Length: 395
Ligand code: TXA
Ligand code: MG
Image (cartoon, rainbow, N blue to C red; front, side, top):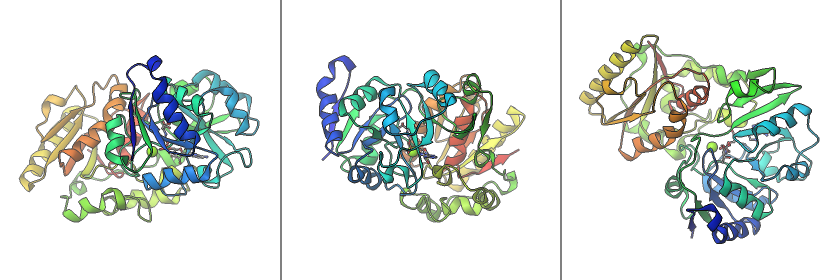
């Protein structure tokens, strides 16, 4: 059975936090809110506890977990001495949505957490409930996002419940998360910051602290598909293959996306990922999803609306994910606004709930507007591209 605590005010929450912390200290698994998404925590030193995380999520065991701490003085027990640059990044961005990959101290963390790597991703979340819970547990807390593998990350406790009720020991409900998508994951190569996963801390913000910031080549590589090849009606087989259980096949991508974007996936696979998580299809809704890009907004809206109408004639249930500036142009079974193109934090905040809503409404065909890959837009597009199985229509 999964225990459930609701926290309205953090300062009155000591019972919930101490009960949840005791479960963590005793080797159990507890989901909790962070400023990015809900995490599923366990003691990072306890292999049996960490194994429960992988089992509950259905997560491939070669994908390492991030370790969360509440205070800087916890850090040195788990990592080897680090550079001045790493220190400056921590000073500026912790607590906050930045995960720094550092050389792990031998035997300090369960090898299940690091998936056998010599490094560990460390972060200090900027959330009162998370910080109090970690501190009260007295443990370093390994925590991936608290979703079934392949599902959108949870931004509400109800999302965690949908995916993991009965499979974990507890859920701490601290309301909606803030950022709405995951932390930025970086590694340091000398004094250069290499971004392995864009997220809550933007590249522009990193550049304010470190002169050289690069995007890992495996991130920037996508191939567009021509509009004429873009629309393939969803079949029952596609929908099943897109489902949670089969979302990570040999090449980590659902069969439907392999067929539609064969070239881009082959190419992407030839770039050895530096972060194991890069190779898995994440966040996939059950319907077929495509991203639509074009230089002229009127052309994009007209193309999308025409495809939505065709989809309706095929008998699909259609969904569209668009920005406030164009939302009035669309008629679909589900129309979701990502907020303004000029405030992409709104898109980050709403994206995962929107992907889940499409599934709930039985949407089989989804078109999403692209956004500029600047500021938070880089992380938003990274998640959209993954959700769409790399299928981008370039007009
Ligand atoms: O915001 C977040 O980071 C959330 C909250 C719960 O903290 N956590 C999260 O964890 O997103 P997860 O497991 O869903 O994603 C962790 C990512 C994966 O892509 C993994 O491959 C990468 O971090 N990662 C972890 N350890 C790594 C390492 N030592 N080297 C390279 N990549 C690593
Ligand atoms: Mg995740």
